[in-house]
Image: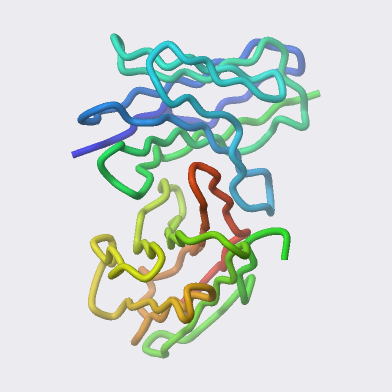
Length: 112
Length: 111
């Protein structure tokens, strides 16, 4: 079946550090890939998405590129801020199914 | 409303009691999803409604869980005879085409 694997957290970085959160997936067909973010006390928000191979999703300084050859969708940001502290979820939606498959989430803490 | 609204935001219940969780999706969104986020776990799919089609119930963990969607709008997730392992945040999402919006969730604590 479909699955998503993320690097385990928590991840603690200093402000302005470079961020990478690894995400790999297993899926049949050609899934769409997503990163969701959950800030403390809030619901999930879509951060970025990519719907086909080699697409790059970007938003708020975050980027992720859909790599079919490595089945990966790693999240990156060049310079993190304290306000980026949150839990980040990688997810896929198969083009055959109707529901998401989420990774376990990675908690990011950015220290001033 | 502008977003997906869930109520209550927090619910504490005694083991063995029934609970109802409500989701009010974005107007015009034909698809509605329920997910569960347990402590330290990722999101677990529970059930999916699409228009007037029969719901996809494949994620419901036991027959104590059921959900309805009345008039293609508001949905209620019911958990009967709650158990401590039911403690989690229950998230609702609605969508139209490829735009998904999640509610803030209901935190259920079974004591």
